[in-house]
Length: 407
Image (cartoon, rainbow, N blue to C red; front, side):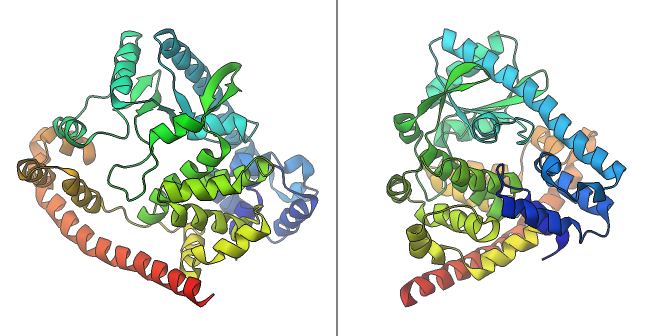
């Protein structure tokens, strides 16, 4: 494994053991180009995690001053951004609470303080809040707009989809450049698993974030949600290493609180056992994250060698391709009548000028027509490649299932 990849893996834990610190120390001796390595680590959002370990590393003097400065900047930039986002989180929760609306704080906005214990260590780009229903999410949106928050203008067809099949989250609400997503669901409607927001509300806990008591997922639902969110990125080729860091540190920080019978039972109930334990096994095998021995014995075959190989490609900077045509085809199945299906297909082929300008970052509206042939070509290529992509993951699943039968 390349030295830069080792540094990323070894920096992932918030509280590494002495042995893991020594492993990181030894790895630093093998770095030949610090500028390149630190640039990659910062680009992977791992700079703050490595910088926080500098006081414990006897070989930190091997890092040149400019590279160390780059690491330090990544830490304090994340801290500054996180501080602003937590102030907005507190403000938003209080506003909604005054109107009788409660929310559950999801993903980075919860993890940065509750799990990472230092908001400089976990970059998050937006604030994700879970409401109890679509109706309550819309009501929350109206309240925030009246309080001076701005809202992205929705596309006509997105309004149509929200009306016909529902939505995961409403258009982003923005306050002073910080986006907020008001969720009614925890995953895309077209996915096979069924992690209902009602389930998370049923199990939620109370925790203080930025000095204010807020609703948060319990450890089991937190772990499951992080895994299914990571799966979306893993399959479309835009993996976020912070997602794996989250799993690793949830397993480590909550190891005495995680109820594995609950995790197994809920994963089966939510129809996502294969996904959840695939990433738990990946975190254990690649990051040495803690799991009980019996969990390892029962679920080791849930991760295939091909998936581990793909992870290493991602770690080395490989980017897959996102096939929006696949998402579109899945959404067609969600529509209840043929009239709506035809309307959506036509929109996929001939979206509005506003949509085209936003999607392709066009400034001249008179040139929009030139991009329709380009869109058709992308759709054809994307469809072909997505079939190959799907077959690859089916082959991985088949091999994993075959191993299960053999064992």
